[in-house]
Length: 385
Image (cartoon, rainbow, N blue to C red; front, side, top):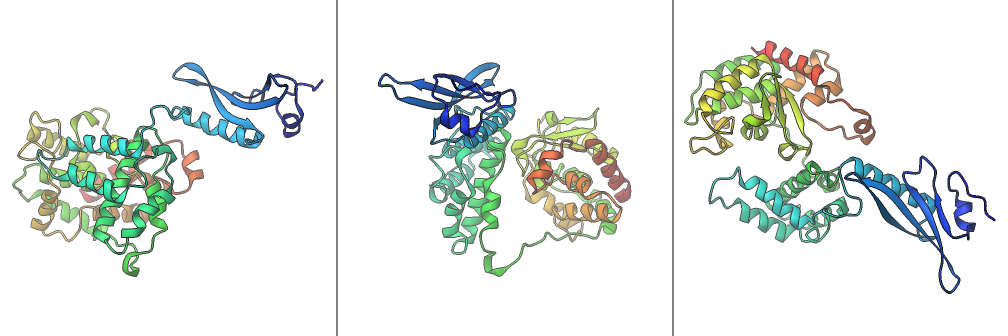
């Protein structure tokens, strides 16, 4: 009789022929080998895993032995356990196809688009023409190679279409990350594998030296625009170093004035992860003025028609103020100031909501460093006035 082991071994799995269920021990994440004798006397072996999904114990099949080895079964069990911790269902239930996720992403963005905007149809056309290899696949099974097949044919021949396809496909995956359907955005690695268009390297946004930002901010405050909320929007972008689109789409229900924190949902973040922005005293003052201008709108910076502030309005403020920088360039200015004032790199990158490229760093960086970031951003506020 084969002795039942505390944990499974490759030799035991290969030789055991007594029907029963053999677990992989306390650290086995619910993995077990089930040995069964068929009516014709044959021995079959299959892998199962017991996991708790939404509070209920569930048994998941991981495949037959020897097609699935012990090492492979353990890896599957580990992946499933990690997925459950992220709120995923390892059985695949509820995970949408790319086409379904694209439809939900468009529906989410439609709320911010003007009524009658052609953007929904344009996004649908992009996915239909340039994302066909993805449409029928579940989003958690799409790899960077799949995205590469979409972008490669148009990357050099149709750069404008490729740029739109890249950003729109990435937006769908950011929505998926926010819903815990997958942990990463495969567009990033796909783009890394593509050649630089016309041999160019990455372009940089025009930015001011950090010593000139204070004067630029004062010039902005003395500027008017047809959209009253455009000036405070620019002020908030400069003071918080957020991306322009994140500021223009800000909603009052995201902002806790008492705690001094603005929580941007994952669906509106480039990395697809919720981000808490510490609000300095200057930022809180800007928001106080914006509250009076926004009236009953749920948007912090509404347009005259009640929708989100147009992207050109903040840029127009910069031009009228004579500021030679892009909105995004103020992030670079803030980052340069942090580097020169000795702010640790991991804190500075966290201030800009940059996600570490190293998966090891991501795994061990448990804190979003909110308290430390609050100190840094107040220092930036004090520096630029």
